[in-house]
Image (cartoon, rainbow over all chains, first blue to last red; front, side, top):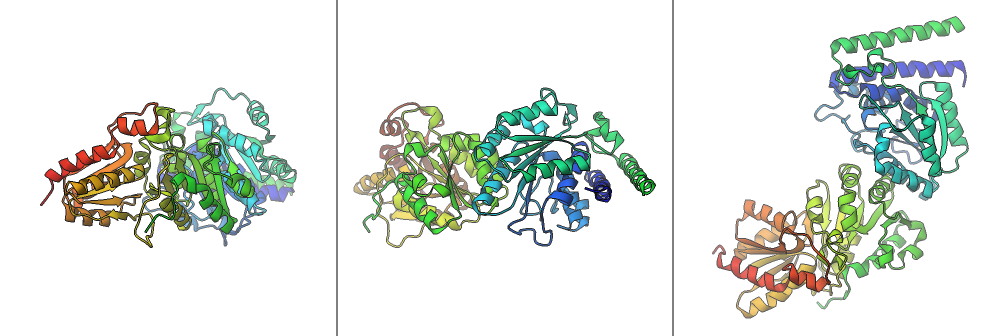
Length: 286
Length: 317
């Protein structure tokens, strides 16, 4: 991909991060760190890989995205709004009574949301079912599932890992957001992304790796998976909890509590500053 | 009308699913290891494209079912109730009941009559688990005909439907002609003004046996096959107890959370009358033959007779 394409994705990711910070500030949620760590993966998918029609959200051959990681709803919602699945103003009532954007994903309420969510460890199994159903119906749809590294503790995920491989699901592509953090604390026991990937390999999955904050790396890894479908494939995306907002990146206790107005303000200033640097950098190059 | 279906609930599953599969290529059956018990007959070989064996992975089976349903397949899940309901409850709740997906669950080998394998395999509390879920329908058929009609009817359902099925051979019941079966429905098997007996599944047969003896004693029992546990056939039950003034509920389930609880919740609000319950008295099962177990745990026509005489003496006049 050329520099302009990368630049465009980086601009989009900054805008998405700002919306995520605003949503979390308004809703007093505590999922800032988890949401920020997946933004670049989601931007790469939705703006470069997935084939969707926001004006026709139930188009039968659309690619499906299943968000398994429970704490990253705000990032998905901000992206769906930016894609045009629903009005951006819906973001500001996230988690409120009667809101279209529930604290847990609800495909009946929200256009663009493909599967229910909320509990850790359930998304991959549902993604398997969608992928198997698409294959049975001769659909060309591809199914992507984003899991958090924290939820990989759940035994059910490993049942689903085995199922995907048993059915040789060539239209199933998983991503692990490897931020090494569960609810703000370091995860122990996985070792490196390579060591975790080896577990998937042992189940017969094809494993690839990427820098989860580098669009070149992400898009080329996704393209590599899609171009040679050979059964289920997983991308281990190395990410940073709270990426893009210094106070969230630090991973200290304050990053888990809902941000107050001052922290929201600082985070937005920081992201705006990053935007200016991005534009200056691009001008220097040209 | 003489029963044209002298078959047990479990005997008609394979042919009913085969009929549905032949009509709808989008229909899929997931099997969490019940095919070995010949519950599905020749379905796996007759419809290999519409059959997925999932093995002992109950939660993952339910998630797979949810995903297949989201991608437009018409899904049936077959599993032993004792494994599926408690193990996959989280997946049933999150992935099927909350989004209200039309997945149908055929829960086999439920109740004490699951057989000699003992308490672990004899689930007597599955209705309690399932009844507590919003958005779902639960039916407990008592013979082949009602099973066939309810399974076929569930094809049109917009939400999840659970079938609680006994492994016990149950003969076809004589029913009024042209009877319609649907969630929320009930079938009146015998009319009477002495006592209302609400029963489901295996216990419908015991209730009919008891009613013949009661008739000789001068009490005409009204026997309602309450095959729909949720939604409960509220109107049929309240209309009946207004005539009879007392009620007995019989079920092959624990004393809490099943049909008895559902009927009591209904009647204490709308038409309070004395109610007696014939059910497992809050204890787990054990190994034994099906008939032996029903007798040992007090689930026979004899206990229904005794419950009726108690309820009848206290009836509202």
